[in-house]
Image 1 (tube, rainbow, N blue to C red):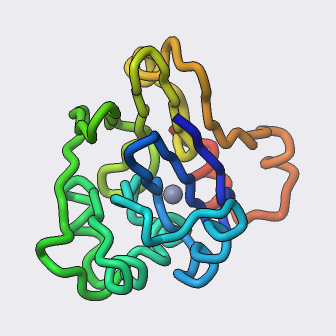
Image 2 (image 1 turned 180 degrees about the vertical axis):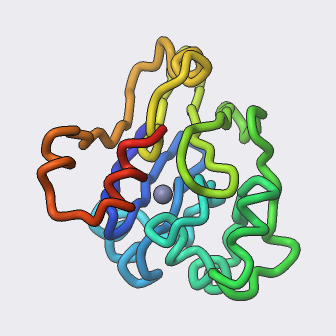
Image 3 (image 1 turned 60 degrees about the vertical axis):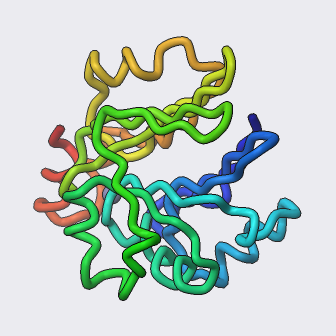
Length: 188
Ligand SMILES: [Zn+2]
């Protein structure tokens, strides 16, 4: 299993994961063109992508989903509430490309098992994933206000962790954000 963080942060998120048999993206939070370019920079192409797993409906995670789905006929995976929340944000996605990936379930693609799990974030039903192949495990969590024991259980024993961790309480309190945003970031 190999992976590459194509982009992270509030301007857009996308992570590429491949096995010998399959290739996937977790989120596509930039324009389709930008994602194509980032894949090109690691000598990969959208044509190889077997599916995109959506974590939640915030625009920095789904911006390119509609365009890429329509252009490459890529299957898109999200849970029911996230699909509902994405409606109207990503344009038309053909029914045969809309797949349900329920919370706290496993999907298997050849030798790869993908586990979804809940996180604490202000979206409809946000979830992240672990990727498991043989005795190797990759854990991805970027958007969560705190880490529960349940999340710890899911990511325990991983060989690689992808975290986005930029929480600094005093920097936040001193910073220029309006109070409503400070309160959001300080909450669970
Ligand atoms: Zn978010």
